[in-house]
Image (cartoon, rainbow, N blue to C red; front, side):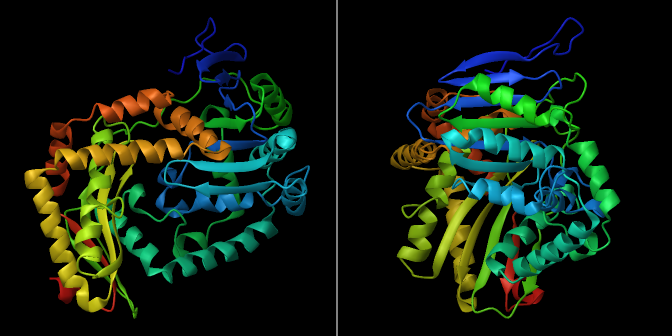
Length: 441
């Protein structure tokens, strides 16, 4: 479990380190910024991530897309490096660097040979802590992001998920596009973005995570050196705890949203409200999700694709946030087959909600959850992500054995209960294809 470190006045007086087992160590710097690493002896690679607990749900409507905009801009140059130097220095040693934005956090990461970890620390920390946000770069990236938004709208299989999420959460920040919209991105100024940057990117909300052939003390020393004299080398502060909802997230009443597109294939998502990230029932939901629509042996895949050939792609999924969640089933099929696909989907959901799963299915679902988790930790990048997400989102690090034990402890009653709650509720439907609203009335 993660420890808290406090000085006499209740604040970290110095960098304090705690061993968390399994080669994992965690240090809290005086500023409240955390460094957490996992040593993987014998590995010749190292992965580094600078994780910021700020995402699109932290934006006002007028600033929708600011986190994603900022993600683009932090690679455009600092007082020490140009945009070309940021990318060239990492690529010159065979490494790679990138970033992504979610609704609740943003990550800047690099993967390099173990000998080049000091370079990766210096480059990433420099980019995150000391970006210039040159006005000319703002205009260039504005154009890039607007093209990205337009491109996304040309991918109906992606767009339908955004429409479904908005159908669930409405005008709540969780319902908005991470990228923002043309209406929010076009007028956004450099001053607004820089203000968001400096207000939100503060040490207590930042976790630097690394995994690979490394020494924890060396990584901490490199991070402190890279951040010295920057805006992230600030006065003493407490690490921010995991995000907690101020109040219950309000959901939209179940309804249907149809986006008319002249497409060869129709894309549908049917589903409803799910559970939050720290809900203890998440392990039972993982088992349910895998059996219902998580693989080729799942009920939905067998009924809709294997037995009837109605769709090429069909699956279920759960998205979980600090204080809310959703559960949905996606299918892509010929427009003329949508009605049959939806009828079969609804029937299968009702069947599971009413009768639950068999013992054999639950055993298979547990195996799928455990296998995907363990096999997903085969490289330094996934291990680095595990460290950061555990620290940033949960406030503790569950060992692999502990997690597998939690999955094993799931009972048939646990799965049946979450299935009945989620699958028997009235559901929303999102559709992208050659239809109008009347087709689904």
